Structures are given as structure tokens and as C-alpha cells.
Length: 332
Image: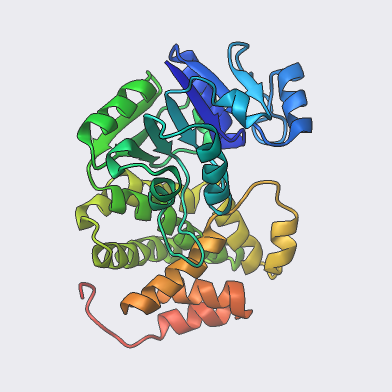
């Protein structure tokens, strides 16, 4: 079976290595031709996964056409704001691929669509041909064979099971789920709460604060998810609380890092300019805030993160405003 992975960032490279070690023919697309040359000559991705060897049997190319030759499965592990453009390019090269796996976490700015909806739209697919792979899974750890567990979600149980079989290894365990909406929203919205957790770290707050942020953040995610048609119990699983905890506490988390720098007084533009990799939570915060307004869902933590990111609100004032909201029962 030939599998194409788009694109060769940290997550795409880690997944390509995993699939190659599982015995599949893997092609890895890297749109940066200079980085492609480096990856081919050194068999390493120095900017994204330094020190990790890329097996010789993985084809690395900056030619999307070459990557997609005779492919049966396409893995999208690409920043959310590039997904639609890339899917359109794929559609001009290959007509209706057999199976698509989305490993992109986000909500499109403007359209407010989930990643699977974009892929379905641009590639003229049925929802049964799309599987979402999500969960607590930092590329840095997966590439070093640290035990990791994720979930494959699809409207088609057969498709989810196929992806489960392809990715399963002694260090990468995959469960299946039929709640595509919940799994996607959990993976996207946890990045917003991770920004808040980072702000908490940057301000010098403690474990009490972060524990509260994660718990009340999960309540927000569940409220919005339920309004959008998700199964609330999904958010108690790997793509919900599992991914949320990992992203909020991990030193690998780009979103937690951005929040931490904001808490220390840095400006958002300055932080993002210094980063090589993408912090999906920044764009997702805008989308989540807009969705909450549109659907009439109360999301106080998301609202305050939005105010800090895009309105220049002081993080300490944002924390004060959260703490001084009107008293209410925990379950409402």
C-alpha cells in the first residue's frame, strides 16, 4: 500500500516514519525545496525533528505530483490555514482518492468549517472516505517511540478500523470512534485552553489555577461541541480531556508556549515572528469566539483569551474578570 503524507513538518515527518516502519510505501511532501534537499541528503528534518533519522525507504519530494503517484491513502498533517489551498492542488492531480486521513487540528477562519468539511468539499468526497486522527500526540515523542495513544474517527466504522490497523504499533495505539465532530472539535478547541494555561504559567500562577482552567475549559469545549452536534462523552476521551491535559502541561506545546510568553508581557506579533512552527490555537481562538457568539454559547475562558490575543487586554485583568464573574453552580 502506498501512502502519501502532506506535509513534512514535525507531525508529518513523525507519521511518515511510523508508517514506513509499519511496512508501508511512504511518500513525504515538503513544499520547501531547500529543506527537501537537506532532508534527502541528511535523512533528517533539522528544523522540525532534529536528531531523528528518516528511513531511506521514504520518498521525500517537493513535487506534489510525484508524491501522489499511485497513492491509495493521503495523510494531511498540514497547518489549518494551508489546508484548503493544498486540498485544491491535490484535486487537480488526483481525482477522488480512496481514503483521506486528517491530522490537522483547527477551525477555518471565516467559514468556521472543520478540517474534514474542507477536505470533503475540495476533494468531492463522502464523509465515509475521511478519517480524523487525533489525541495527545506530540510529534517529538512519537518520533522517539514514546508510547502514545490516539483515536481514529469517521462516519464509516470500516474506514476508522482501516486507519487503526495501518497506524497501530507497539508504541502507537489507536482506538476508533464514530463521533467525527466531537473528535475534531476536541483537537481544535483544546489549543485555545492551552493558550490560557500558558498565560497562567507566564503570570507565575500555580497548579490550582491551571487545574481550574483545564476543568472549566473542558466544560466550555463540551458546551460548544454539544451545540454543534457532537456527543458530549467524546470530550471525556483521548481527543478531549486527554489532548487537553497534554497540551496544557507539555514543554512541547507551541500553544502553551505562546500563552506563557503573553503572560510574561510579550506581544503576539513578536512571539509568532520568532516561531518556526505554527501555534494553531491563535487562529482557532478567533473561530471559536465567533462560533460561540453565533450559537449563543457562553465561553468565558475563550472570550478572555480572545481579548488578550486580539484586543490587547492585560492578562492579569483577564484573569481578574474570570474570577469575578457572577457566582453560579458548577453544572449548568
